[in-house]
Image (cartoon, rainbow over all chains, first blue to last red; front, side, top):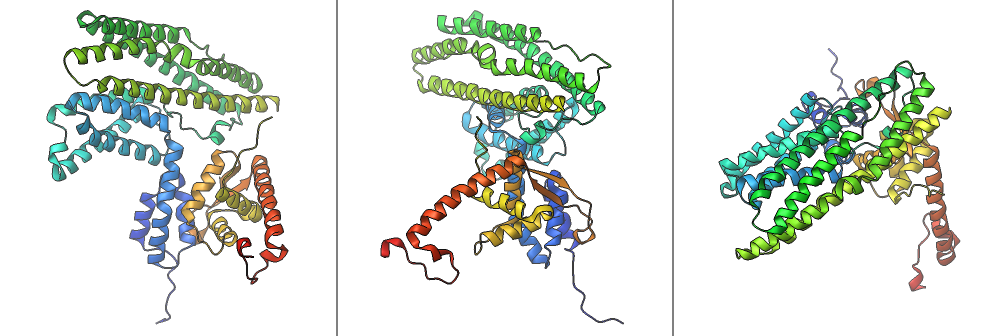
Length: 353
Length: 125
């Protein structure tokens, strides 16, 4: 019988399985391979993996989430949970739980959620994050957990669902991916058709949400306690309708069938140039129309609070949050315009070749 | 005229390692080369991955997966290569570093880089 000591050249199966599970799938193949190549002993392997994992996860999150998209999602969930549980402090834990779950879900996904079903699964993961946060609070700090009526805040996921259906990448597309042009005619046509489908869906969502917001502002308009609030709600309703009409007007023509590779690239490029123009001027026709309405609503709400002897800082907070949302949306559209320009340039270069 | 992409100090080191390793540039070798460059300091393998991802997003390097190898449990290597813009950014950063080194040589003396030489700070001379 051979009694020579054997040299262990691979990590224990259980440790390897745990490390493999924790590494995001998009970089699992090469990271696990590199860790195997550096393998000396089980302890060294665990230490090596523990030192590598935080960087790999953070880098993946940087690639799959943008600050502006996170801010807008936090805003939607905060409003929903704060309104449902009638308290801002109680909304912190569910929003934090949901955002951690959503950001990690985005980092660990193999591909971007495009279909309605895939986005719904993302929302279920986010809702799971809320439930986990509440379970932890129920054990540690029950007085901060949201009351039963606070669970109506899950409606916030409806807004995020629409936002993610409207923009599946949420702006998190690396430049090197944007600059990659399909090399075959079939791949190009598939991409153009997907782009057309996504554009049509985004436009439909914008129109429906715009009409929804316009109707939403009509209800408090009739019962507004002061003229500023009434004017604010009326302007808000008109702005939403205006944006819905503009979106209906912004319709792209689908690429005709049977075009060759060169003409297809040129057609796609012209369509992106048109979109780039829309995105670049978005602050003017999309965000600016809402500013007068929200200004009147903030002034009206502050006057109302003063009349009832309530603190006035609520108006300042409301204005600051709205400015924050507008800035986040503006940063998001600027980044979108930059990415579109990279794509237009890449298609231009490919067309010349 | 568009300015070349600006890079940080660690990005500079990683770009230099990728260029030095040529066809053999992948996670493990890049990490070893980076540690050789910044010796005696140590650096985590994860920090090298994060920097490579950032450089790739900036369009300074490209990567591709090689065929799987048995010593890695049948897994592929992610190879890296400098893009033209990456080489340009590396040259610009190195030029700035060289200018700094030239000035320091003037202050500390030409043999300041010689191993084993006792370095004397300028304020004590």
